[in-house]
Length: 141
Image 1 (cartoon, rainbow, N blue to C red):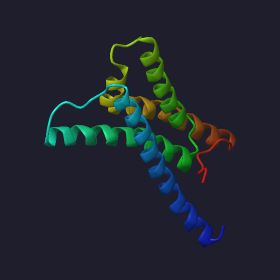
Image 2: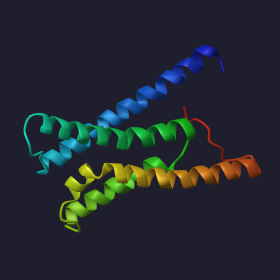
Image 3: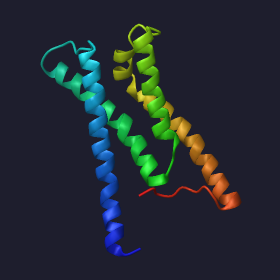
């Protein structure tokens, strides 16, 4: 692969990850705030709460996108979409009292669940690569 092409790929991956995280955070936060989730508090407390919410939604998308782009791991984006879909289901059918605010506040736990499941896929793929020489961890782009 020519050096110019490799440098372009190295620049493309972070751009895709950052844009994906920003778009996801904007879409999810817009949906949550338009559905009645609000931040109580004033001044610096509100700024910190909004920063926590935005950072959480950004990382919830950016980390799985990076793992997919860099290592071709499928579970991070799939688990993230499953968790979001489960939140939408709970919101629509009333299966949880406050699914939207929970999604916003417990994002470190949800990201942790995603990473634990990703660890399982990573170990399986490394074992398959070492045993059969297939399904290794390779960049998508």
